[in-house]
Structure formats: structure tokens, C-alpha cells
Image (cartoon, rainbow, N blue to C red; front, side):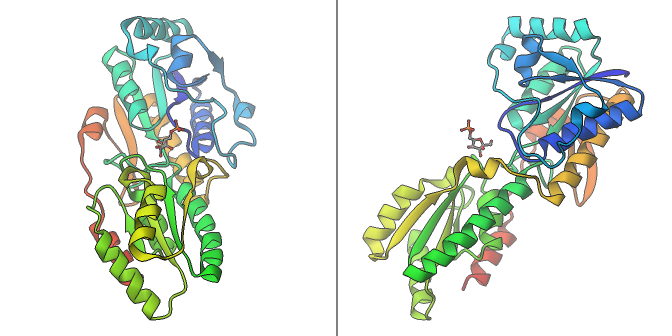
Length: 319
Ligand code: F6P
């Protein structure tokens, strides 16, 4: 292929800009033409497309968000939306598309491939919920943002001898809570993949208090409940002073970490190489520290069990 397009779609994730940069610069290096499609599939439906040059992606590797903007587009899922998208593709002579985003983005990429436009998916979401890859772009940064905030919470919770319930994002995936919990030394982690045992959590908190521990941090994944409801329930059952904090969209922004910048650069390069070799309908990922690509449909149908070793580790280390 000689002419490709790149878009970001769904929730933004730190590292998307670094990935756009990698796509654009790799494509230009290989002598290809590259178009940026604004606001994800919306830009395809509504012909919002611009040619990207070397300096279009200057000074963005360190920035969170996405210079191409992002949106969720229902019209793309309709017959008319697809027809409009195909005519945009034809107008610019786009032969393949790189779509950076989460599962909704990947479904769009599958639709495009089905309609004869080879597409490659790059996993860009803080949720780390795409089962075929060990990590998604933005996850590392989001967890690090949570860790910084948990450090702050620990200070004030210890001073007041309180319990802090920290709710983090992740949709139905508990990875942000799990990694932030282990990294932040949380006394308990509650994730959607593992049934909650509140009595056990209370017992463990009491034991730690008896030993002289001054604060407790409970990491709660948004898919497993609400921090405010849990705080109320625990307050009634224990009488402890409890505060709840919802980290919210703060964890979606910010400068990407080194890990996300490197991952973005490798993902972007690999995706362009695939299209250069006329290979579409692939999902790029990282498995056992190696950049891989697998069939898009297969990638979406895979299941990844939660890392129970990590979950157990959190319990052991928080004793
Ligand atoms: O998928 C990323 C994510 O941040 C989820 O963790 C969260 O549930 C959702 O998006 C929030 O979506 P919105 O930005 O539309 O509120």
C-alpha cells in the first residue's frame, strides 16, 4: 500500500499522540502518504481528513490526549454511514486504515475490513481490557497517575487514621485497580473478576489496626461497585472513619510514561509495516514483551483470565 489513514476513537489514552507520531513518521520513512482522520469514525463518515507531514506530529510525543481528537460515532454503524465512509476512503485513495482505540474501535476496524478496506487495530485504552495483548496503550500512565494520587491519600489517611476507598476506571476490567493496588500497597483490592468478600476485608482491616497500622487503602474498580456505597456500608459495619475518592478522568490525561511512549512507537511502526506489506485485518499487541499481530476477529473473541497470582500477591504483601 502507498496511501493510508490513521484515526483515534473511543476514550482517549495517554500515548495516542506518540502512536500517531510513530505511524506518520514510519509511513513517510517508507515513502507512503498518510492522512489523519479527525474524531475517529466520525471523520470518515463526514470527510474530515487532512494529509499529515513530518511536522504535523512535532512536539506531541510527550502530550496526553490525541491531536486527531476522538469521538464515538453511531452513524458509522449504519448502512449510510458505511457508504459515506467508503466514499471518503475512495476520495483520498486510502488503501488501508490504522485505528487506535479500544474494543469499539476494533469493531469499527472489523467493519471496514469486511467492506474491503484493510484495517489494523492498535490497542489504545487505559482499561487494559483487550485480552489478546498483555498491555494496551495508556494503561501504564493511568496506573502511575493513580499511584501518585494514592501516595497523597496515604499521607492524609495515616494522619487521621482513616480508611480510604479509591475508585478507579477500567469498565469491566479490574487491571487498573489490581496494578494500582499492588503498586500502592493497598490493603484490599476489589475487582469485577473476583467475587467480593466484605467480611474478609473487614477482618483484615481489623487485624492490621490491631497490629498498629494507621490507615487502610481499598482499591475499587468501577466495574465492581461504587466507592460511596461501599464507604457507607463499611462505615455502618465498622464504625471507622472512611473517605471515598473517585479518581475519574484525571487518570485519562497527562504525559505518557516511558513505557507508553516506547509501546506507542513500536505499535505504530509495526502497524505501518503490516499495511506496507498489504496485510490488513490485524490487531497489533504485545505478548511476552514481543510485538505481535493477530487476526482482528480472533483478537476480539479471545478471553483472558484475571491474574490471580497478582491478586493473591496483593493480599500477601498487604498483611
Ligand atoms: O474506556 C476508557 C474509560 O475511561 C473507562 O475506563 C470509563 O468507564 C469510560 O471510558 C468513561 O467514559 P467517558 O469518558 O465517556 O465518561
